[in-house]
Image (tube, rainbow, N blue to C red; front, side, top):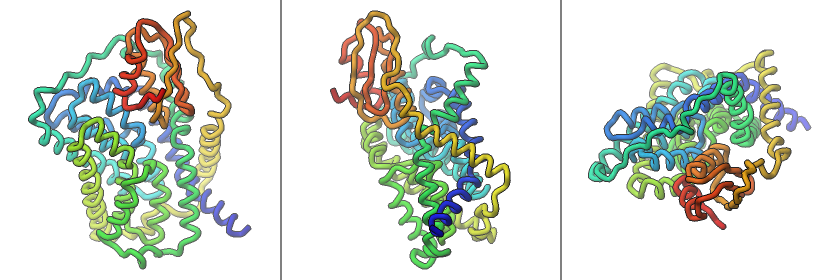
Length: 413
């Protein structure tokens, strides 16, 4: 019982420390989702040269999109005329961080790493995009220009509707996507903090490049959420992992996984996929070594740099609110209607079974791709089952399947 109480205490301490920043990050992410749409990004990433690459990386850094959600967005960017180099830059910078993970990083790991992390994401995006630009110069003549924004994507909403939509995304939709991962990360972090003695890894792995290589190998093949990985990184640092090694994990984990690499291979080709993987690995190691160097020359102690101490009233109240938000995110899907309402027009309903959707971004991408098919009136997507209902006339099943495939998913029926 004592161990359980200690585990709960560790869990609450980490939760309270990150709660004010994560809640604020959720809200900011909601407003970004309203004011920075995929169409806006698409219109700015066409053409060649360094400027589209820089813009793509800059667009990607604050967006709260994970490595599973960014792939179909990247496929859409590519289909709408974004260059391979700009698409790669966006793919590299986006999943590594977001406004929510930046604020959580500040709360648990301090300002230096909180600044260093998005800068590393931005720089690796530019480097990877630049390498792809150089390697695909012979294909410039085959590139298409981005499509103009159609009327339906440029329609405006009232300020009140935008506010409601932003808050709903930030406090409902986004927590539904990453809430489970955050809670799991908190439990693991609390368990590591409780079970392992201080400086445990310092004696086992030591400092320098070898520890970073271990973190790199651990992070590349598996999916790690950019926000949920921060508590685990903080726990590892208290047990002897250097700040640079933790940063390697924070870069490589969110940016890569086996499914992401396979999809990049399919969307952009073998050469670009290899450049992507090499950029993540090389960028993570260089960033980690540089961060450790900064900590060394400035005489910064990792344990002192980590935020510790008792919880304030603001932190405890924020933690309670965050628990409510995450709890709602976990249970609300079970109370939703199994089949969303679809517009009744008297037209036929076509049902597709779509594989590969993992979050709300995936649902939005599939919906948008299908709505762009001529004749489609409305679309209803069930994320849990993959069943998608399309209402309309004047199109074929092949038309719908092609739209889904172009968006980066599979139709299995």
